[in-house]
Image (cartoon, rainbow, N blue to C red; front, side, top):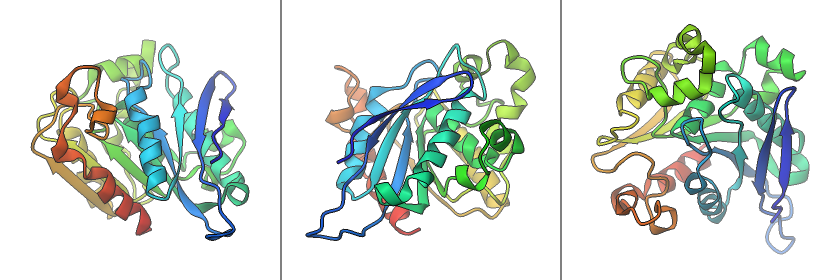
Length: 269
């Protein structure tokens, strides 16, 4: 395995990228290429959660996928700092696709909660010249091939998780709210999306996923969506491995199959 820490630097920030890249074996298949899943943990744009980072990467490795975890910049960094970092990460994967045996047409951006907002932001904004010009790379280089969104923050409207938007926007909170309400910016160029959420989520209401899904449907973007009746916010894998301390509510057997279904979705690209 290639397990490295890479600095992702923009003009104003530095993020850390942790790679979990499977190496090829001559005994099995020396020319195999694999999908790459870039994981953006949640944390309300205040921090990046350990529970939605390495355990998810290791599980994806076990399913035969490359993975990496982006510890993107959070408060006091403001929009679009983290988005620029994620854009650079996608570009880095494509530039190193041959060396790391990555299928350059299967780069999936996965996000949890506020990390889901970050992932979906790249999904709707990747064609914007403001990103490519600032980074000096083409829009095609930063395009994700798919979005894997777990209980994502999406809307800044009625069903908003307000804390995430306060942290993301800082002093420009009111002026930029509409800009980062992602259901308003879906186009036919938004990548195919896998979504899951729980009905009982009282931190990031389920309507966030429904709003994004409806916009995808209106733009004829391929979608797979799963709604679970039970489970609080922030479940990650829903297993003992990703339990939050001694809080039993973050172990929810009913949702643990989401990653298997996501794996089949990724393999189907």
